[in-house]
Length: 353
Image (cartoon, rainbow, N blue to C red; front, side, top):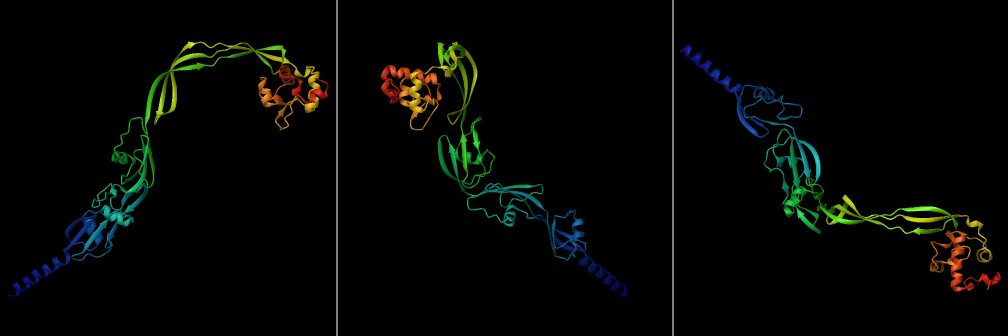
């Protein structure tokens, strides 16, 4: 009887020992939950036993130094990189949440009704990095095919917006911002239609001008000896059109239709100061003090005080005061022959009638 009793005590003692050191614990590693029996005394030992690796960024609850008790729940949350884009604003973040919804709460992001998300709210976050795009309904301006319109959209990118609006993009077309660009509130967007066309054009070829010096003409005076004429080419031209307007023009090939003719011009070399002005010097002395380059600002110019209208009426070039003395006298003679000496009030004063 005593032996039997002793055996029972040992057996009972063994049972008590097993219940004390074989605890039932729940381990939750990033949402993966398992119930385990363990003889580990601390959280660290338990996780090591189950092959759960820890680093300095991992969060464990309760702390790894905590003792294990039956019924404990041990949570392990590893760090997860999240590239977050909210309505075009990009940020880099690290969270310890298990799913998208929890991460958004941690990051203080509350998607509005109708928002577009690149990941489902209940989708688990990966350990190798996550890209999370939240695009709330927003107003943007879209210009395409000559029409500009306001659009309310949750499309995260320009490409998604164009797909939503049924806009096709050709291989040469320009999209601003780019197809992969994230849309921001109140953003202006545009599709520029690019087209290449080739056509045949007639192109003028400038003629050359050659000059020969002539001592019988005053310096500054010229005389055309032989008229020049522009040539003409036929050219094959490639045009780059942006929304129908020429952006770039390139000549692919050209051939001559008519050769240009060189113009020949005599150019005077005679010193205008050597001119004996005679009566014109006397008139200029009275009209302008003999200053052939004067511009007083009163609407009359040069030594003989031409008005611009009168000067032009006799074929005078430019402004009178910018021309040589000889040139001013040349056109004064034309005016005198046409209208008489009365054109100059000083003529009578210097004895010319």
